Length: 134
Image 1 (cartoon, rainbow, N blue to C red):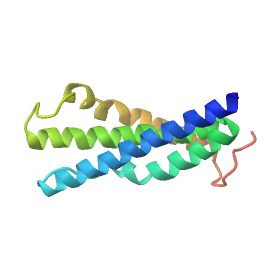
Image 2 (cartoon, rainbow, N blue to C red):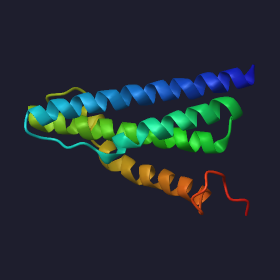
Image 3 (spheres, helix red, strand yellow):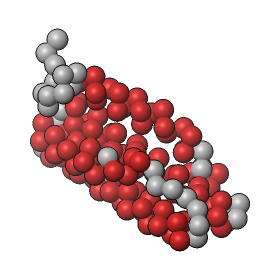
Image 4 (cartoon, helix red, strand yellow):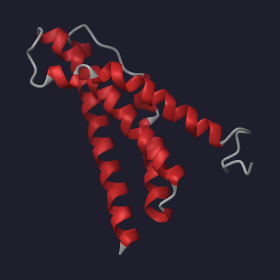
């Protein structure tokens, strides 16, 4: 029963990550049509990392899977906060609800985003898709 809950949690986090990703892209497209905003490069890594992480975490409850899933979630949240902040700046300050909460996430999440990416790269030092043994 425990593995079923872990699988449910992993796929729920994946669904939330993909919802944030789609919303970030939608906001970015809206910002671009108004003459502002740029796409965060994180949007390109989110689907791959989050999906691989969810598959690994759901089946094995493996730490590597949770790192991949965490990186996907943090990158999607950062992309969303960047697009949301740009939309607020284009619409006029304070035009969107909760900007005082979501706006600062843009600056706070990038160190966590790159730290998770660096930790994952440390797991695969020689470029092969199997963790190093020592």
